[in-house]
Length: 230
Image 1 (cartoon, rainbow, N blue to C red):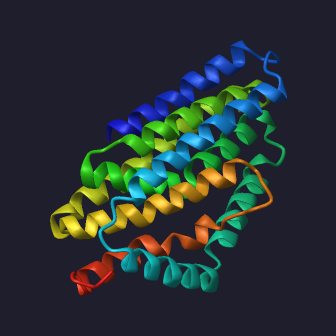
Image 2 (cartoon, rainbow, N blue to C red; image 1 turned 135 degrees about the horizontal axis):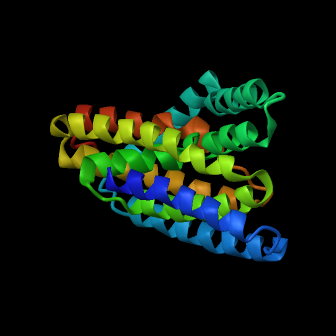
């Protein structure tokens, strides 16, 4: 839970700092900082991905996961859910509610929150959540400078959401072998790398949301075929 606690604290600190520094950040500074952080995210993803001992499992998982995600339209559904919640709770309620709902959705809906919480629960490694804490803290500074103190209260749903995933992952840890955890982490690492590419805001847009099933497919493939040839 340490990574989630730090993540929630970073959002609160970032919000307070953003309210203190309102109007003092240029768009160029914000863009450059986010580009630097995106490179760090890609490095984290690659460092996880190269630990695979079975490229075939990772490859098949991504292919099958992508097909399943597209059929279920996971990314589209997540985006639609976010828009509906924002429209419902922001209507006529002022900047506070808009800030709270918008920030909560941004911080909770994403592969990094899921993968970071899973990694934290399975291995005790909080690396992804610590990087996410930096990202969320920086974005909280930007959001709060325009939307106000409501951004800070998004730390609560982040804590509950990621904390629940971490506890669930820790509960099933005893049923997972080292090989399963390794391939699951490697597959998730490639998704983290994809998030880093998306953060650069280029013309290339990777549908990371639709690829999320690949993480769980990697679990089943490794469990069913522990000696699947590379």
